[in-house]
Length: 425
Image (cartoon, rainbow, N blue to C red; front, side):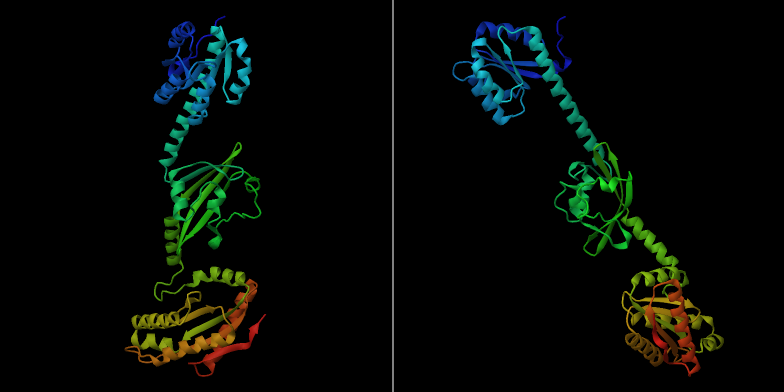
């Protein structure tokens, strides 16, 4: 049964080089029927010129020719296009050249006189491989275009982390965070910041991604620091055969809005300080800190008299004034809450002496100020310091600070008192 030419041959161009006119004419007639375009040369030098001009997909050449041999021609062609498929034609007496031909990486050879079916079989094999590669490249380019149309950052990597495919958004993400190499996913993930409970891959303990995916697909939030800004991405990653697919979605704006909403939820609308809802967060922060903190319990003296005499609107202004003065004497990391009514709770990471100093400064600045129409007001402060290791410690500290505040009130108000023993543990 005769071998039928592949349809793929019709998509390709071919250079045929043969110095024997009779053979050249006969085979040219056959080849023109099967390929898209045929270029014919009578020697290696002419063949090299045609290749440079037309860049054909396949080369068929005799080995021994005048002016320039097939071996010399193909050697020059391979320098400019190493992947070009080549078929040599040869006589039995030229087998000594075949080793040199094999060294050049040719796809095969045909012994003259050339059998039609053997020629078509070799051409079919080469043509199918070329067309399949073209289609794969076309699909790959289409895939890249589809990837690039998404705002999410996509990247496909090997187990070693080597990047196989990435889209434009991923490249922009890497550039934005300051990563100048995206050859490996580790290059990008190494910029991740573990603050705020964000994911951070342990680069030193992970030689590849296999351990990271032991439980299948992964998802988390990853954070990058860009100057003073934090850029958040929600990422999902899954194993696909021998590859790993990562998707990063920018959720920075969502995080910002969530933070604003959370802040509003935990903020006292009158004083601008945290409200009692923040108590649960404060408790956890104190326990996680594992360091000495001081609690300042502050109460406005004779506040009921202010409300009764001047009304609640003036009372509200007094609360806002006291809150402002408290906040102005605290560091960024210190925490102040409106505990309720005219009471405030301040938490400072310091020792008892510094806490007392801060409390005295706040007390004096409020005492010396004048608020119309009330005049002068004063505050009383109770202080207790300790290491908070449990929920019980947290509430004991508050209770002791409250006890110290009670003693300040009992001793005449407008003063700071330290809890008995000052420090508990």
